[in-house]
Length: 381
Image 1: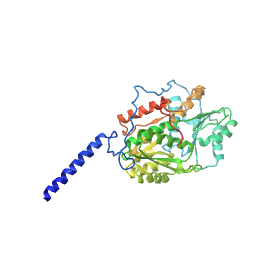
Image 2: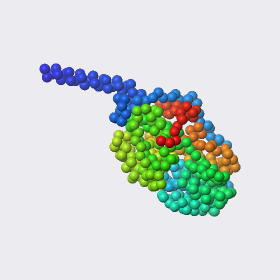
Image 3: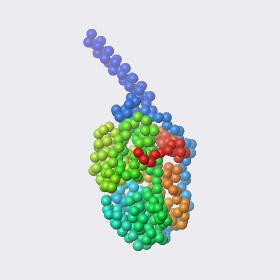
Image 4: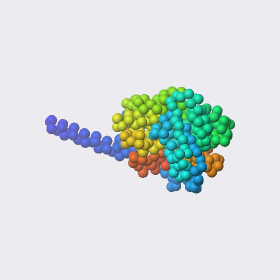
């Protein structure tokens, strides 16, 4: 009798295994799925758009330009060159101008901001560059907007570029604006497809409208791809406290909190604090999505690059390079009003090999729908 009962139990276990394998086979994401979000199961996905036959993005202008006569100044935001994020992207644009357009390295100058510095420090930095004959000068970040209202009129012959903001009435300040929400939408799609639990997270550096654009696009992308996905959201510091962009330990703490709640893919828009977010993901065997630069290839986060599934590319490098090129050609009108998906101003990286051909096709399908206006991406949460 005991032997017969044991045989029945074995048969039941075998039947359960077969049913489980059948359920896995039905899951479009390639993992187990019981249809409920946040319970350890992969997502059920909405029908994805087909990838377009050809790219919808505009080709870069390949004409050769001589910018060797220019003296270029960069006023970085907090973190400066080496932040593995926003500022490094701007630095890459300058480096490309040196390589492609004959800009002489000795005719460039790079200065960086300090956390929570007084507004007068930014004005002094910009005046120093302008007084030393640098033209053009690029303010890397919206934090320079107030200072440029004061400094730009003092140097009417200097061409200023301003990343992420505009200065109304200042004819010598060119805004370099981005559709961060569009690139973040694609990051949300990536997170949903990479999550094994249908539970993802977002960590922002500072709770300000600019970073909320990243959050809004990410959440919309994730929920469009997987309507039942659960999304955690956290900002390291409130508006006004900009240390949230340069506090890796707090970034690590914020990410760990989301991972402890069940999130297994974290998207960060937190500047240098992202280093801590990557560390938290590595320690927990989770995944992360970088921001601004292709962070998989950034030397300063090389020890955690294996967790970086992709990065949302905010092509500050393209904006800086194109601004320098437009100044050299004396044709600022050629610059786009917004660096969006259509002009390759934002996008996603595939370094590391975690974005396979199937997922890339899905991403290109969503990208095409955004470019065509079939999907309107929100810029506010």
